[in-house]
Amino acid sequence: MKSATSLEIQSLSHVSRQCQANPEARILLVDDNPKIGQSNSKALLQRGYEVDVAEDGETGWAKLQNSRYNLLIIKNDLPELTGVRLLKKLRSACMPLPVIMVIETMPTWESPEYSWLLNANKLLMPYSFDELLGMVKRILHTAANIPVQLPSPPNWQRELADVRLRS
Image (tube, rainbow, N blue to C red; front, side, top):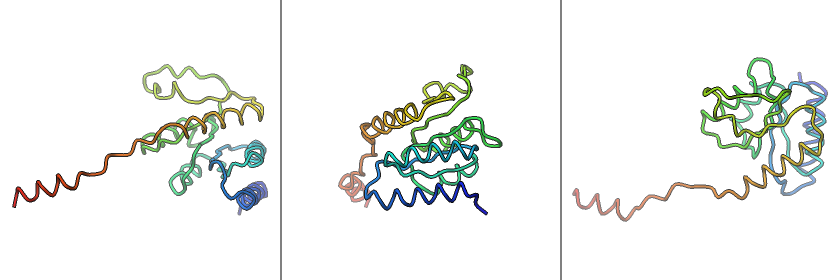
């Protein structure tokens, strides 16, 4: 059974979708503290973002596999599947999703094992809503302006010519 907090957040998300024909972005917020998750979700919804909330890393991973998001905001210090481990799974699955990692202390992450985390977007706790919203806006704006590198379409004429030569 879902907690009242989860139902309230889902209700707010549904209202946001109804009020906005074209939300700016879909955000997945993963935080095991329901009060923080609800507060952050509310702040993001008020700015026009569509927000889904997961209360643990495993639920967040399941949502990432079943839905499309423009941004992941994840608390690092989660039980079971930590933020770093979830991010590692995300990158191993070749999901190019921008991420904000919420951390309690500034990590060193200098180990070669974690070199891929050096350029991660880190938000140090405690943070203000303005800091969170500013980082979200900056990251989504940057991601929107990066051209997507699609593979070149196949050259069907050349491939047909190759088939004809073999015949």
